[in-house]
Image 1: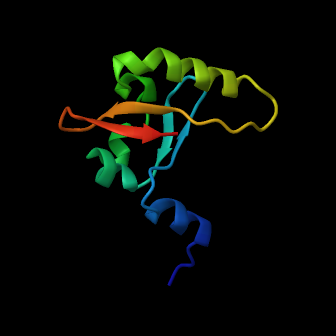
Image 2 (image 1 turned 60 degrees about the vertical axis):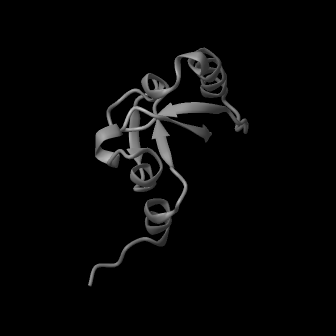
Length: 96
């Protein structure tokens, strides 16, 4: 039986959506919770731009906050609350 790293198991099977996003906004990793929360298979989101799924009324503020954090050399924590489009065209509130 292959050994699976515990951290990888935690990332993949947590109930919270976890994603890695490049400074451009492109997803490079999305865990399995995306299916339960958003209706998308993780593979559907990898390579997509996260900002394209954010509600138009929330996009500018989220992008500004994201870019400010991405441009810093130090670790800083901040939270953004916004609407995100689901696979069926609806909206859910997310906090990142």
